[in-house]
Image (cartoon, rainbow, N blue to C red):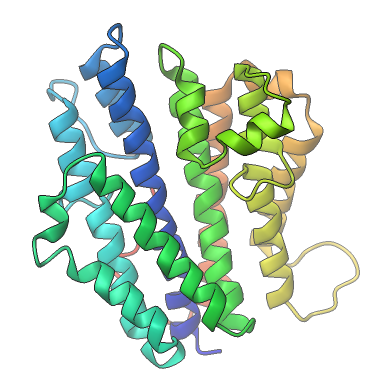
Length: 308
């Protein structure tokens, strides 16, 4: 597969997932600010901006309006939903000849809401619901219309790496938030009902963290996402190597997954924000390794980026 096409498919997967998960995180945090009277709005907003990789000065006054502008509506902000959707559509345009017509239409129609002003006219929580629905449409269309070839594996690889990264950010926000954020975090991941069935209705912070990090059957857990990303890389490799891994991305993803699975949960929870930061660094390093191995011949895509 041409490196240009492979790179575009990878970033379509990442950017659609980034837009959806940013909407999920914003939905959780804005609801908590409104519902929990004891929450310091400005401190919570600064924490959220920091976790999402937005640059802040110590003297910056940050409130919910600033957060929504920078992380949702502003097409010039590198961390916004609008930017992610625009980048996904640009990646799709570069790989137009390999996409099915329904998938291109789903991506293009979603993007057109931004320059038309429709996206900015929507307000929370409707804008978050709209983003989740459009992402589900794009992903569902891809599942239904794409052959399971290399393009599919690159799309899934990007989606899974981004999902592991963004789930870690959701967990990190819950770990440092006041009040009772875990129920809202589970709902943001679409995990609440699955969590209740798994834990027989017993809700604990420890159980919620374990479910979102380590559950092998829930598709938004970190371990599930890392495992699926490993499978995608393995499917893309054809070396038949019998010992070790020449693919740096596969080594990074596998080591991080194994560390999470085989360490005791108490060790992971002891400093959860730090552990989630390590996971985010791994996702960034794995992306760099994938870029060097598969996309070296592709023209540089200047809008691409990994949340820092």
